Image (cartoon, rainbow, N blue to C red):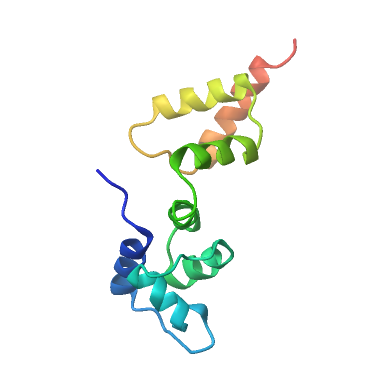
Length: 126
């Protein structure tokens, strides 16, 4: 399945939400109308503002905005180079957590936090 274009994504959000648009906001600007129609690119520095007003995931919107400027290879490189460093051991923990979960990983509950801390202490230096 193909990813939606940024215009398709934003138009769908606008239809779902019908944001309050005023002349002073970027969403009320002529440039934003051009982004919606596919005539212009969404500036990367406007992503957080637009995501906040349209109540959508700013990371997802940023990724779509990046695709206006860069291909998947370049975006993957940015993600690897700018991401918080994760050691091989930390990645192994993350992989275990993801494999133990069915579907998306939800936020940890208090019980799961305590259990994780107990497991980490058990793995610590002896």
